[in-house]
Image (tube, rainbow, N blue to C red; front, side, top):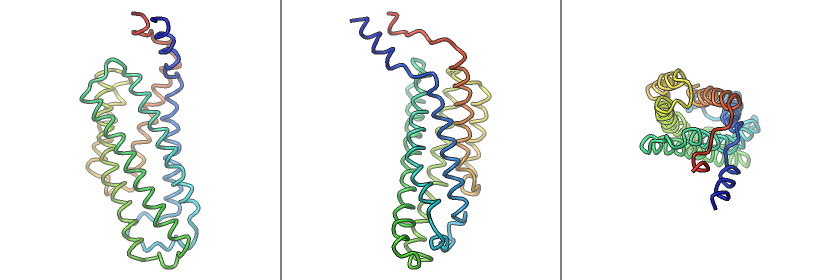
Length: 227
């Protein structure tokens, strides 16, 4: 019975290269940000003239959002695996809850933009331009991303940085940078148009650190299998 448990746990062990999910999350989010910024003006009150000139880059960006969510979930799993038995319930709850709320808001904003700005605009683009429905959808998605989702990203960075300090799963300087960037998001996200890329950039840094450490160390002993 013990051998079967040991074998099962060994088969479910997180791959050493799993931290590459954080790198993938950054690359996908960077692509999404670039595609949207090159097609959609930053001003949430703009009339929507870009709807008539083509929405293919925006459609591509919105189709990439689920893949970014998958990569981020995998990254969360990597962090929890690395923390292991040292996980504190309080910080783990805040860490996981803020991450899931961030993803939920990201998906919600993408759905609003996709439904109103792309599906409806593809049938009657001229009617959607400067319409009340367009302004409502654009403003709603803007507030969800730049106010609520970014604030949840800041909470995720604070809780993760705290876990980094207490468990030493990554260098201490990464946690200190996380605190600083989280403060920027909490205080100035509404006024900084590029604040959306702060979380993916920080995830990239911590993922590279974990990946480098994982590939340079021997496999960790299994505490359950050794019992």
